[in-house]
Image (tube, rainbow, N blue to C red; front, side, top):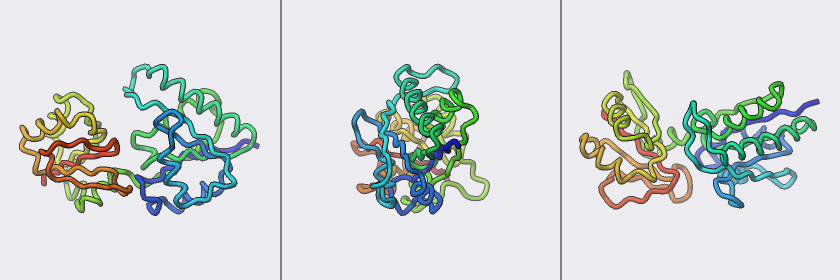
Length: 239
């Protein structure tokens, strides 16, 4: 009997934001494969899980996934592809041995998650293996909640975009949509803030660092010398 892979959204940071279903399945699975951003580093997703679920009887595999840009329709960086292949191979071994595997991932798996890349790689190796995606609270929703404002209301048009896009695309997006969520902002503040100022949108923007995690900060003045944490999001809402 084959095991099943569960890609589980564990929320943005606060363990209490994990869903009951996520907790139940993590308690059920004997093997957890947890993503880590650094070699031999800790897994943020695993740290969230450990705030709720006892890991003492679990086989924990911490797997490094390089934090490099991935562009749809283009061949991924060889180091990134190697990490996907290695993770999928480990998962296949456990599933074929009849063990269920949990892959905890930050936020919601449907939003810029490594989990789906691993699933695609897994299906290339063994297309008949069962996989279930468990949604979670997104960092987008958590950031809006922390800032005390909606993402969209009424006929507002909402878009989510990585801030690493070139300014031309950002300008076009900011012009066309009522609410814009800018992710991955930590490395591009030096060009993002002047663009928002030029478009007279600085007073419409709020930056949320580490939403729902320890050290959460909300900044409405983006003109100061900001060096935000990797887990940072800017919400621009014109209304």
